[in-house]
Length: 318
Image 1 (tube, rainbow, N blue to C red):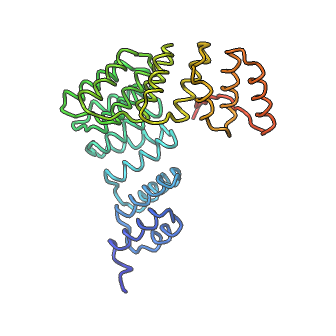
Image 2: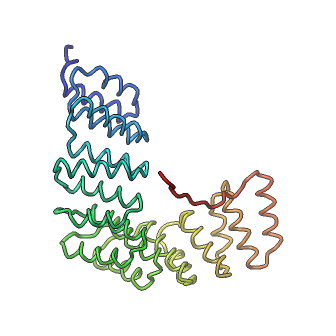
Image 3: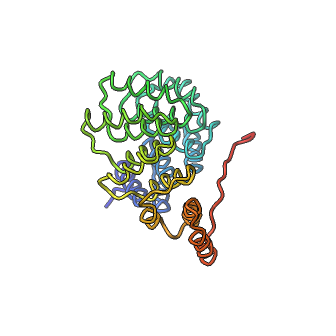
């Protein structure tokens, strides 16, 4: 029909293929474009990230520079997302240098992508400096920063930022409360967690989700308040999921407390996970049900299930 040279048609066609997960066809359209502008390159980089190919995204950015196409804010947001997925601090810092050298304004989207990259790569102080330098902040950027601070053990800063967010006139939503409740859970701040949960329901009329209940059960279980956690599970308006059950039963095991509904709760765990067999057997051992515990371990062995051992990883010299 004669539209093959139209950049708007080509960019939209590329995006259609990429959004459908057909990255090969999208790349073919991209390679056949007579003119590739910043929108074309930004779409390519974004699509690589969305398809789980962050290395290709960085490669596309380098090729973009070789063709003398200047990136815009949208390009840099996608590029930072690629750096975050790879936990590539060096590449992320290079993008930051590009932003500074070219005096690119830190709008809320670019600023959020930049500080999230630093936070995910373990540089929480740099993330906080970028966040504080942003002239504009929205609910999403504040929520991400609260979650980052919580993950780095900065519970006081997380709670302080939540209060600042409210003072800025930003009304917390369900995700914001999930972030602050998770912070309280990780740090063992029982009274603060209860206060935030109560404010969420009474002040902001937000109906608690399974995630909110999960945070509270985890918080109470970690603090040794098993019976309170048990009551919360029994009074939940929905069925507890496997995450909540494992968290609660793990706390029961650690404290040697067997819930009255233990058998019912245990039956709801996924039977294909070896870790659940081990957890259940340990619960039975706690109440001296040695035969039940042994039967479970035998059943686990017959089904060829294993508990994946816990592990950690660190980066050494890049």
